[in-house]
Image (cartoon, rainbow, N blue to C red):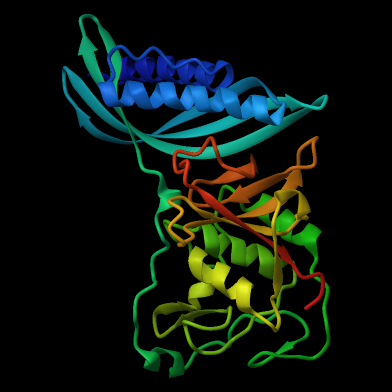
Length: 331
């Protein structure tokens, strides 16, 4: 398949994708496998109901496709990894809102007569994966030389605060908007980066590091020591940060609330996609829609001002459980 041919087919696919995001109708899919046709029909019905429940009206979708890698390219079939940057515009309460997200798909194009068609779409719902790094490692690693852990103003050593400091919610949200689609080079980046990103946002808002020197306790990021990046599980793993916020009595503390309407800028939401008690994804509140409902930012699937419930995510299921945390105003 020549490059010009698969790019034309990709252009047609993106146009269909945009239409499906707005009008809820499945893209032309007669060439897709049966299971994928059923999945797309179910998603279209869910999104239509989702917009109706929110009293929101989708206006338009603008998607840019960037080929990342040609996996296979023959005269009859091409397999291409593609990055989709979706900008979705919708109206609610007389206001126009914009949601951004960056997704990745593997598309299989097959020759059907003289035309090329998408015959398979493979997605990897990365938000469903736990962050890497939650494995045992030698305690001696913490006792080798290197820099001190990152510390905010008013924080001394092992959890002793000189004076209370205020959580700067606007600064946490501004940091989240600045780095929603990229990585701050001052920190390590992960393939599953959602909680590392949330921790950075909290830190930017003034949340104090609680350094214990033990990976399974506290909330801290130390940087590279003896060639290894060192941080607590709670810094980089969704389930660990949720447990930390639910139990911390010093420094970074939070109150669990029952409804998303109770959240403010800089607050945090956790997602248990399977309802099995393990939280796999985390987001931070960065804005609100015209009805006062939270809009959130995230990494892993980079997202900006996304509606809080994530029902347009491929990771979402009917079993999804949410947990809402209001970060304390003072530490």
